[in-house]
Amino acid sequence: TLGTDGGGISLISGPAFSGAIQIKTHGGLGGSANRYLRLGIKDNNSVFYPVLSINDDQNVGIGTLNPNQKLTVNGTIYGKEVKVDLNVPTPDYVFEPTYKLTPLDSIKTYIDKNKHLPEVPSAKEMEKNGVNLGEMNMLLLKKIEELTLYVIELKKENTEAKDLMFKMQTEINQLKK
Image 1: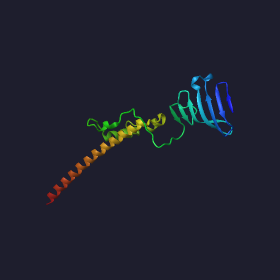
Image 2: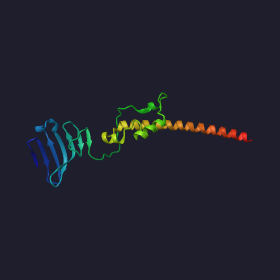
Image 3: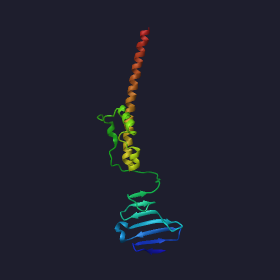
């Protein structure tokens, strides 16, 4: 069937349990922001369910009628690769000699009080605001780089302690003689 309601919706669809295309070509009462192209399916009651929506603001939606970003997906995204252009600096500055690592006891105090790492959003914040993958990946890389520096520092302290223990054991053995 092909039809138009008073608001400018052109509908091309078959009977229930079939595909449907909705095209709204002019604003009508809803204004220009309500122009769209929608591909979807109809259930046995002829209720339209969106598969793909393209709105007047050039946002694309999969599984949603009203995408609010350039791509909005109501479901799981599966792919072979996701590439994120970074607008945040990479944390290699952590390896500069001027970078000051926070003492581990200060980090423990912060964790005991706040129940998450410094600079990392809490679970509640992430649930509320979502997660920016580019920023979070750089933050996690920074934490990994800091952990690497802590491990290097601990290894140095451990080697120094072993050397001191060896010297002390040598002195004890000489005193026993």
